[in-house]
Length: 222
Image (cartoon, rainbow, N blue to C red):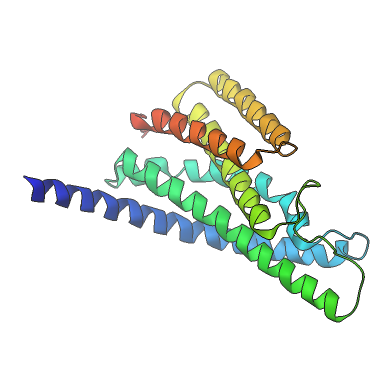
Protein backbone atom coordinates (compact mmCIF):
# COMPACT_ATOMS: atom_id res chain seq x y z
CA UNK A 1 0.00 0.00 0.00
CA UNK A 2 2.79 2.43 0.99
CA UNK A 3 4.69 1.52 -2.19
CA UNK A 4 1.62 2.22 -4.32
CA UNK A 5 1.05 5.61 -2.68
CA UNK A 6 4.73 6.43 -3.14
CA UNK A 7 4.55 5.55 -6.83
CA UNK A 8 1.45 7.71 -7.26
CA UNK A 9 3.17 10.66 -5.61
CA UNK A 10 6.30 10.18 -7.72
CA UNK A 11 4.15 9.93 -10.85
CA UNK A 12 2.31 13.16 -10.02
CA UNK A 13 5.56 14.99 -9.31
CA UNK A 14 7.01 13.72 -12.58
CA UNK A 15 4.01 14.94 -14.61
CA UNK A 16 3.95 18.33 -12.87
CA UNK A 17 7.68 18.67 -13.51
CA UNK A 18 7.22 17.84 -17.17
CA UNK A 19 4.46 20.43 -17.52
CA UNK A 20 6.58 22.99 -15.67
CA UNK A 21 9.59 22.27 -17.88
CA UNK A 22 7.55 22.46 -21.07
CA UNK A 23 5.86 25.74 -20.13
CA UNK A 24 9.08 27.25 -18.77
CA UNK A 25 10.90 26.52 -22.02
CA UNK A 26 8.13 28.10 -24.09
CA UNK A 27 7.83 31.18 -21.88
CA UNK A 28 11.59 31.61 -21.60
CA UNK A 29 11.94 31.68 -25.39
CA UNK A 30 9.38 34.49 -25.48
CA UNK A 31 11.18 36.23 -22.61
CA UNK A 32 14.48 36.22 -24.51
CA UNK A 33 12.87 38.27 -27.28
CA UNK A 34 11.44 40.65 -24.68
CA UNK A 35 14.82 41.02 -22.96
CA UNK A 36 16.52 41.70 -26.30
CA UNK A 37 13.99 44.43 -27.19
CA UNK A 38 14.26 46.13 -23.77
CA UNK A 39 18.08 45.99 -23.90
CA UNK A 40 18.16 47.60 -27.35
CA UNK A 41 15.66 50.21 -26.19
CA UNK A 42 17.86 50.96 -23.20
CA UNK A 43 20.82 51.66 -25.48
CA UNK A 44 18.90 54.60 -26.93
CA UNK A 45 17.18 55.69 -23.71
CA UNK A 46 20.51 55.76 -21.83
CA UNK A 47 21.52 58.76 -23.94
CA UNK A 48 18.80 60.80 -22.25
CA UNK A 49 18.31 59.05 -18.90
CA UNK A 50 20.44 57.88 -15.99
CA UNK A 51 18.23 54.83 -15.36
CA UNK A 52 20.00 51.52 -15.65
CA UNK A 53 18.67 48.59 -17.64
CA UNK A 54 17.46 46.83 -14.46
CA UNK A 55 15.34 49.78 -13.29
CA UNK A 56 14.16 50.56 -16.82
CA UNK A 57 12.99 47.00 -17.43
CA UNK A 58 11.14 46.94 -14.11
CA UNK A 59 8.74 49.52 -15.51
CA UNK A 60 7.58 47.17 -18.29
CA UNK A 61 8.27 43.61 -17.12
CA UNK A 62 5.16 43.34 -14.86
CA UNK A 63 2.95 44.35 -17.80
CA UNK A 64 4.70 41.83 -20.03
CA UNK A 65 4.19 39.10 -17.42
CA UNK A 66 0.52 40.07 -17.08
CA UNK A 67 0.05 39.30 -20.77
CA UNK A 68 2.06 36.08 -20.49
CA UNK A 69 -0.11 34.91 -17.60
CA UNK A 70 -3.25 35.45 -19.68
CA UNK A 71 -1.75 33.63 -22.68
CA UNK A 72 -0.50 30.67 -20.65
CA UNK A 73 -3.99 30.27 -19.25
CA UNK A 74 -5.20 29.44 -22.76
CA UNK A 75 -3.05 26.27 -22.69
CA UNK A 76 -5.30 24.70 -20.05
CA UNK A 77 -7.68 22.92 -22.46
CA UNK A 78 -4.75 21.55 -24.49
CA UNK A 79 -3.05 19.88 -21.53
CA UNK A 80 -6.25 18.56 -19.95
CA UNK A 81 -7.40 17.08 -23.26
CA UNK A 82 -4.06 15.25 -23.46
CA UNK A 83 -4.52 13.56 -20.10
CA UNK A 84 -2.85 16.02 -17.73
CA UNK A 85 -4.91 16.51 -14.59
CA UNK A 86 -6.03 19.99 -13.63
CA UNK A 87 -3.91 19.81 -10.47
CA UNK A 88 -0.78 18.82 -12.38
CA UNK A 89 -1.33 21.63 -14.86
CA UNK A 90 -1.89 24.09 -12.02
CA UNK A 91 1.32 23.08 -10.26
CA UNK A 92 3.34 22.99 -13.47
CA UNK A 93 2.09 26.40 -14.62
CA UNK A 94 2.67 28.03 -11.24
CA UNK A 95 6.24 26.71 -11.09
CA UNK A 96 7.00 27.69 -14.69
CA UNK A 97 5.75 31.24 -14.18
CA UNK A 98 7.85 31.60 -11.03
CA UNK A 99 10.91 30.29 -12.86
CA UNK A 100 10.48 32.73 -15.74
CA UNK A 101 9.95 35.67 -13.37
CA UNK A 102 13.14 34.79 -11.51
CA UNK A 103 15.08 34.21 -14.74
CA UNK A 104 14.12 37.61 -16.18
CA UNK A 105 15.12 39.35 -12.94
CA UNK A 106 18.47 37.54 -12.84
CA UNK A 107 19.29 38.27 -16.48
CA UNK A 108 18.53 41.98 -16.13
CA UNK A 109 20.53 42.09 -12.89
CA UNK A 110 23.53 40.58 -14.69
CA UNK A 111 23.15 43.11 -17.50
CA UNK A 112 22.93 45.89 -14.90
CA UNK A 113 26.11 44.69 -13.19
CA UNK A 114 27.94 44.59 -16.54
CA UNK A 115 26.61 48.04 -17.40
CA UNK A 116 27.72 49.45 -14.05
CA UNK A 117 31.19 47.91 -14.45
CA UNK A 118 31.58 49.41 -17.93
CA UNK A 119 30.61 52.87 -16.69
CA UNK A 120 33.05 52.50 -13.80
CA UNK A 121 35.92 51.55 -16.13
CA UNK A 122 35.08 54.50 -18.38
CA UNK A 123 34.97 56.75 -15.29
CA UNK A 124 31.47 57.98 -16.13
CA UNK A 125 29.62 59.48 -13.16
CA UNK A 126 26.23 57.94 -13.95
CA UNK A 127 24.23 54.90 -12.87
CA UNK A 128 25.19 55.33 -9.23
CA UNK A 129 22.30 53.14 -8.03
CA UNK A 130 21.63 50.45 -10.67
CA UNK A 131 19.30 48.42 -8.39
CA UNK A 132 17.28 51.23 -6.83
CA UNK A 133 13.61 50.36 -7.43
CA UNK A 134 10.96 52.97 -6.63
CA UNK A 135 13.33 55.09 -4.59
CA UNK A 136 14.04 52.24 -2.18
CA UNK A 137 17.20 50.46 -1.12
CA UNK A 138 20.00 49.83 -3.62
CA UNK A 139 20.56 46.34 -2.17
CA UNK A 140 20.86 44.01 -5.16
CA UNK A 141 19.41 40.95 -3.39
CA UNK A 142 16.30 42.79 -2.21
CA UNK A 143 15.89 44.38 -5.64
CA UNK A 144 16.03 41.02 -7.44
CA UNK A 145 13.58 39.49 -4.96
CA UNK A 146 11.11 42.38 -5.32
CA UNK A 147 11.51 42.31 -9.11
CA UNK A 148 10.85 38.55 -9.26
CA UNK A 149 7.89 38.57 -6.88
CA UNK A 150 6.27 41.56 -8.60
CA UNK A 151 6.65 39.93 -12.02
CA UNK A 152 5.24 36.67 -10.67
CA UNK A 153 2.31 38.50 -9.10
CA UNK A 154 1.39 40.15 -12.39
CA UNK A 155 1.69 36.83 -14.23
CA UNK A 156 -0.75 35.26 -11.77
CA UNK A 157 -3.10 38.23 -12.19
CA UNK A 158 -3.16 37.61 -15.95
CA UNK A 159 -3.91 33.92 -15.38
CA UNK A 160 -6.61 34.84 -12.87
CA UNK A 161 -8.32 37.20 -15.35
CA UNK A 162 -8.24 34.56 -18.11
CA UNK A 163 -9.91 32.02 -15.84
CA UNK A 164 -12.63 34.55 -15.03
CA UNK A 165 -13.51 34.91 -18.72
CA UNK A 166 -13.05 31.21 -19.56
CA UNK A 167 -15.02 29.68 -16.73
CA UNK A 168 -17.77 32.29 -16.37
CA UNK A 169 -19.59 34.85 -18.51
CA UNK A 170 -18.05 37.95 -20.04
CA UNK A 171 -19.77 40.11 -17.45
CA UNK A 172 -18.22 38.04 -14.67
CA UNK A 173 -14.91 38.26 -16.48
CA UNK A 174 -15.13 42.04 -16.29
CA UNK A 175 -15.61 41.65 -12.54
CA UNK A 176 -12.35 39.71 -12.45
CA UNK A 177 -10.73 42.61 -14.29
CA UNK A 178 -11.88 44.95 -11.52
CA UNK A 179 -10.33 42.62 -8.95
CA UNK A 180 -7.15 42.62 -11.02
CA UNK A 181 -7.04 46.43 -10.96
CA UNK A 182 -7.46 46.28 -7.18
CA UNK A 183 -4.51 43.91 -6.90
CA UNK A 184 -2.41 46.15 -9.14
CA UNK A 185 -3.32 49.12 -6.95
CA UNK A 186 -2.29 47.18 -3.84
CA UNK A 187 0.99 46.30 -5.53
CA UNK A 188 1.64 49.98 -6.19
CA UNK A 189 0.87 50.74 -2.57
CA UNK A 190 3.24 48.01 -1.36
CA UNK A 191 6.13 49.41 -3.38
CA UNK A 192 6.23 52.36 -1.00
CA UNK A 193 5.81 50.23 2.13
CA UNK A 194 8.49 48.89 4.44
CA UNK A 195 7.26 45.28 4.33
CA UNK A 196 7.00 45.13 0.55
CA UNK A 197 8.35 41.58 0.26
CA UNK A 198 5.97 40.22 2.89
CA UNK A 199 3.06 42.00 1.23
CA UNK A 200 3.95 40.53 -2.16
CA UNK A 201 4.16 37.02 -0.70
CA UNK A 202 0.72 37.42 0.89
CA UNK A 203 -0.87 38.63 -2.37
CA UNK A 204 0.78 35.82 -4.32
CA UNK A 205 -0.46 33.27 -1.78
CA UNK A 206 -4.03 34.59 -2.06
CA UNK A 207 -3.93 34.47 -5.86
CA UNK A 208 -2.50 30.95 -5.93
CA UNK A 209 -5.32 29.81 -3.65
CA UNK A 210 -8.00 31.48 -5.77
CA UNK A 211 -6.53 30.12 -9.01
CA UNK A 212 -6.47 26.63 -7.53
CA UNK A 213 -10.16 26.94 -6.65
CA UNK A 214 -10.95 28.12 -10.18
CA UNK A 215 -8.97 25.37 -11.92
CA UNK A 216 -9.98 22.54 -9.58
CA UNK A 217 -13.09 21.55 -11.51
CA UNK A 218 -12.94 23.88 -14.48
CA UNK A 219 -15.01 22.55 -17.41
CA UNK A 220 -13.08 22.10 -20.65
CA UNK A 221 -14.79 23.57 -23.68
CA UNK A 222 -14.60 21.49 -26.80
